[in-house]
Amino acid sequence: MTESLLNKPYWVVDFLPEQVPQGSAGQFFAVEKFFLSEPALSGLHRRFTDILLKLNCYYDFQVCPSRTDQFVRNPEPETLDAWICREQKNLCILLPREDAMITLDHDDTHMTVYNPSETLLNRIRLLASAEGLFLWQP
Image (cartoon, rainbow, N blue to C red; front, side):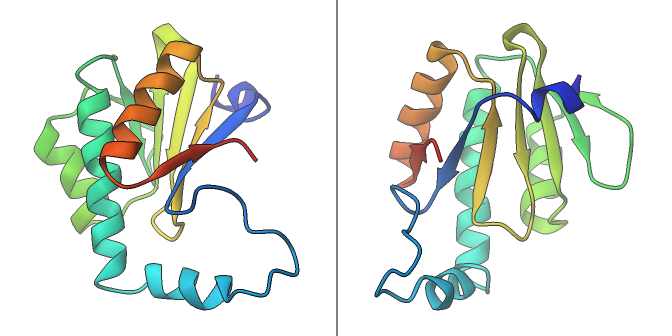
């Protein structure tokens, strides 16, 4: 299921409102490096965690932490928080009823949402906005 979803349309939840154009006069790589360093990285992980925890109120999750092939159904909030904020695991999150998937890599400044329905997109957009983040399609 995960392989087929990787080939579906996707959106990103990001700290920027749109992709930075190639050749931009700004300093994207310096800013990205800043967000990938502490304490900014912990703040970004906290916001991703908050979005996912709130989203789990609406949807059944199947979560697979990095380095395992085990999916955990609706992990405890404290467990999901630990995986993202303390252990900085890469996560694959399946939303079976939506036929959608969210991936989160500990060394990225974004989460990727594959094959979202309009309802799922609208919920993620609201939650991302509340956390000062943006949802856009590359």
